[in-house]
Length: 138
Image 1 (cartoon, rainbow, N blue to C red):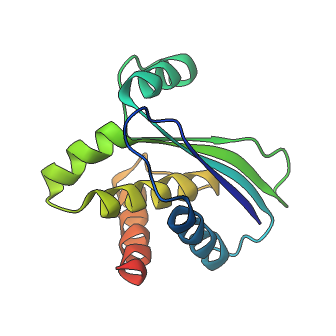
Image 2: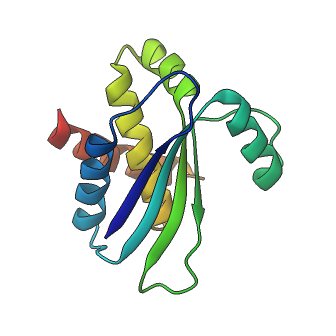
């Protein structure tokens, strides 16, 4: 399992070791050991560019996942976390920034391995999983 983290946010820095440990925990619990993944922390400007370029939504969002896997035997991909949006959401939900960023890392990884959240049932299922993984961290 290879998890890389990159701090591309101009102001805030995220703890790489904790992020990698969380990612490894989630992926192992989900039954994935063959993984090559990058988790990149960015700002609103960069997220808007990515969201517009790849999803044709010209606004910012909190997390984007891009699968680079061609075969199901190995998970390869990138997860982009918008630190600016995470900070706003942490205030709105009255949680720590660490908690919100952890939730977004988990959410992005779940998308990377195939979970969807297009329907209420899917969203509820992902939220339940996120809560379960967060409970193990905090």
